[in-house]
Length: 438
Ligand code: C2E
Ligand code: MG
Ligand code: MG
Image (cartoon, rainbow, N blue to C red; front, side, top):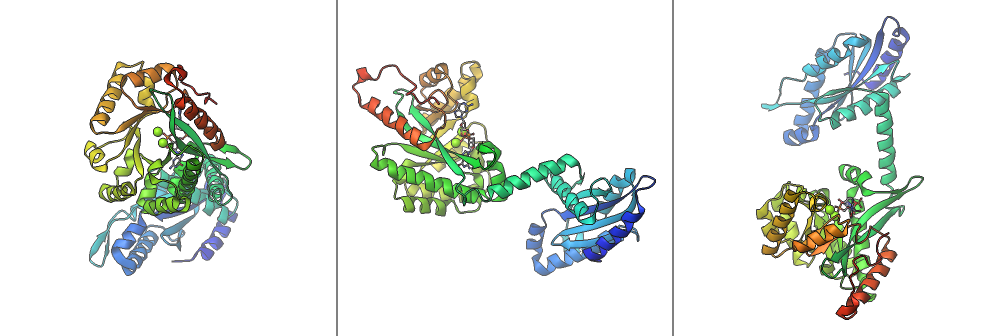
């Protein structure tokens, strides 16, 4: 295939000619879907052979005026030097059709598809390199839309992509630059209002932006793999706090850390937890890992083996946002989790909707018969708190008891709470808030 240098040259010539009579020049970037998996299954030589065949199929699918080039890896570029703008979708489709039939490699059939991004001269860029990078932005959009499709570059795509790129490059430095913060949200005993522990919730102090909540960066951290470093940082911090609390008279508190499914998938969670425990010397039974039901959706046997080994070390386990995923009750029993955290949405509906109350009641009863503790999440009012307590829920967490706050503030509040708990019963009063509301 002609190389990109030649294509850039041809593009330069074409740019001098188009622009009249509704004609445009188009750069189309094609990235094969899941090529890594195909390559792995065919072996290196088989993968090379498949790429050769794809290159051949693409060049027979275009006219002699059009150029196909390989950009490297599993990416191909097609240059349409002069096209009727209204016909571009069909032209792009025509190229994809060239890949529709299965390829035969070493007597095996390989089915491929591609995600395609298209950028057009003059509207999307004034030179070949800009057009190619815009075609790439559009191609990523095609991947995000479920692959096997064509996307044309648009300006707001560029804005969005630029924003995401900036976010990603800033985030990749957040750990080493010390920009992450842990906020702690108290978990209280519903009957006595005494603080029994906290959940660690990460925030990112992004320079020039301010405190970014996890909802705005955890998903990106997961899809980019950055969650590994962030997760390790959170575990280390949490264990260090636990170790310190022991010497401050707060050794009874537990600290819960959220764990992403991705941390399991990379098989590193066990090592990360071990490292954090060893480095801090904290009591493993004070550390709690919060898993979501989705963790169990992929390779459950492997995940369960990891969880069993962590449990043997004494680490506690809870299921977060319980009721929102697809829980298998069989797994729940085999996993031997310690706690179920009932999702905020059920707690919120508790006093409004009789069905909501029925669900919460059933979850609490099931948990009890399995010997698990329950935590109601998102408790915002005294009414919610009372309703949970009446249904037999053990613990509560939510703005009613306290918002997530800095570590030092949390420690002060927890010390106050344990002082109150030490008073004789008459001294307990009816207080539920512990002055924790921030
Ligand atoms: P989550 O684990 O379910 O955490 C509870 C979320 O609910 C927190 O939001 C908390 O601030 C919020 N919340 C607590 N009480 C109330 C209430 O009474 N009312 C309302 N409306 N909201 C309440 P946050 O801190 O924004 O965290 C969102 C999610 O981000 C967490 O949901 C968790 O899934 C994820 N996350 C946070 N920190 C980490 C982390 O270190 N690692 C990972 N993998 N995920 C994290
Ligand atoms: Mg959580
Ligand atoms: Mg939750």
